[in-house]
Length: 153
Image (cartoon, rainbow, N blue to C red; front, side, top):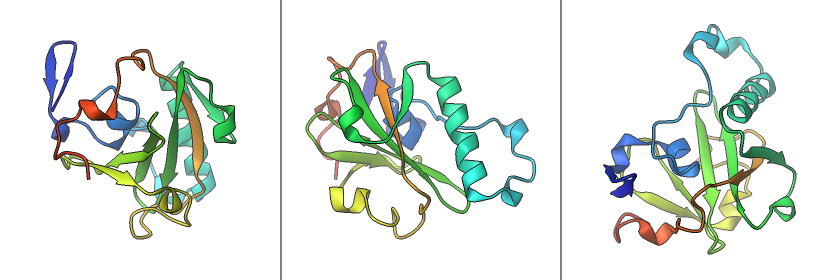
C-alpha cells in the first residue's frame, strides 16, 4: 500500500508501468484505437509505436543509450515487449532494479545479470531493451522503502 496525494494506492490498482513511472495507475503505452491488427506488425514496429506513445505521454521522459547519460534528478526505466505483452523495470537510487507483475501485489527485485540478459521473466519479454531517463517530480521524496515490508521480494 502506498499513499499518493492523501489517497491510499493498493498494489493491485497499478501495473508495472504505474510502478515504473511512480504514478500508481494502470499505465498502458498505447491507445486501444491504434491496436487493430497489432499482431501483424513486426516486433520493431510495435516497439517504436510504444516508445513514441510513452514519449508523448510523459514530457519528462527521454530515450537514452546508456545509464551514463542519466542526470542526477532522473531514474532509469527499462522497457521490453514479448509476443503479447510489455514490461518495465525501474532502477532505484540504491542501485537495485525492481519490477511489478500486473495486478500482483509484490514488488520484485531483479538481479542486474537478469536485467541485461536475453529475456525477462522466463523468456516472456525478449525484445531489445529500451532505456529511458525519467525525471520524477517527487524523486527526493521517493524511496523504494516506502513500500510496506513484505511487499518487496
